[in-house]
Length: 78
Image 1 (cartoon, rainbow, N blue to C red):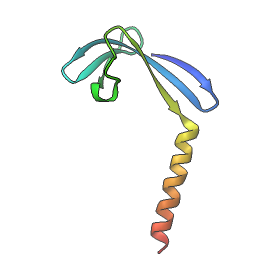
Image 2 (image 1 turned 30 degrees about the horizontal axis):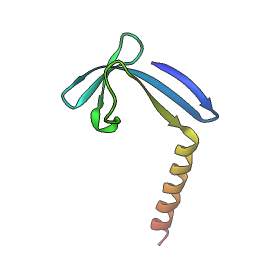
Image 3 (image 1 turned 45 degrees about the horizontal axis):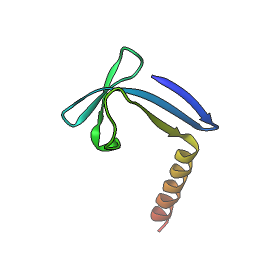
Image 4 (image 1 turned 60 degrees about the horizontal axis):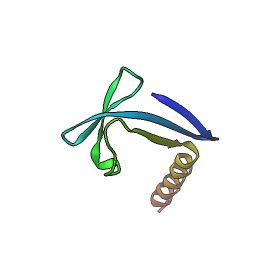
């Protein structure tokens, strides 16, 4: 699994699509470890031997957590 730091709080993880099996893409994570990703989350034009990138947005995640916490606090305040 390749990790690439994009900017503060953002990391991209890259996978190689090995093949498709049923509704899953079989992906190579680190040159030897395999995993499955649902085809529904991939663009339809993705083909075998393509590299895909998944971005982890820590700053965006933290904002979302804070937003949900505020909504829950508002619900339970009544």
